[in-house]
Length: 208
Image 1 (tube, one colour):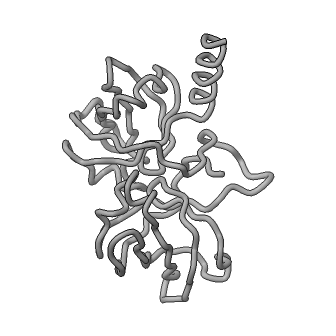
Image 2 (spheres, one colour; image 1 turned 180 degrees about the horizontal axis):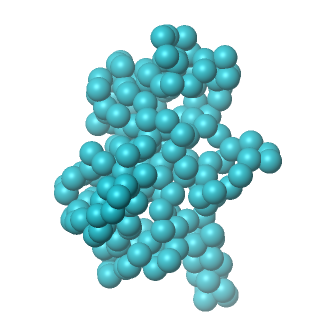
């Protein structure tokens, strides 16, 4: 489990393999001694397993494998050397839950349809992003609810049909990949776990 609070921005060093299995090497500032083989790391949303790790100056390079399901449902298949990705280590018992419960199981891909500056203060501008969700997922997105986009826990500001908006404060824009995002970019979307189960229960009751 994760919280959607990004703890590092990593950079893809290399991608090898073709077809339904890719090995992706990612450079991060994490201490390599703290990453065990088999550890789960959220990489711009998807929960991926560390299959190798080696120390480098200033941190480490860890490798993950992405299989057919991940490549089909997420943006991972588009990653190449130089791609920057949001990283989060898995939640430990006793850790502060500052975002919302995130599984790392991406539901689909949303597309940015608009980016606009909202306010500009002493710490920089805030930005509003409007995104289009896949039709099958839009019913799980509610105003003031939570979504996870590229591994970032965000609050939904407004919803109109399959388009919803989120507000990014200057700090988030600076410490994640959101500052680089533009109209037309595609992001990994995980809908709120509670919303998904609530909808399933409602469907079950309606069908009984």
